[in-house]
Picture 1 (cartoon, rainbow, N blue to C red):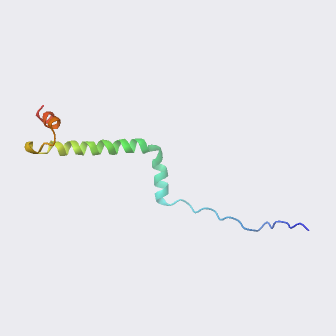
Picture 2 (tube, rainbow, N blue to C red):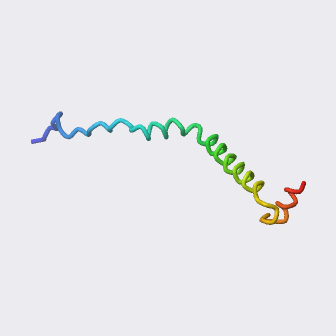
Picture 3 (spheres, one colour):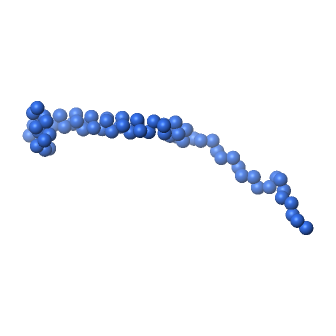
Amino acid sequence: MARTKSSGGSKTPAPPPPTWDERLINSLMPWRIEIAGIALFTVSFLIFLALLSLPNNACPGVWLCLFREG
């Protein structure tokens, strides 16, 4: 005798809805290149401002000292 499959057998549960952080990450993924560019520009601008605020005797390199004098 062949066994028949029961129609009400093991049914996999539906996946839970995405959480708020998963929705945020999924919505920002198309903008990842622009966000990375803005972050890199911001860091470089902050480093530039920090270098300009150094006193003259604390200049870290010859090329940066020449840049400050020009």
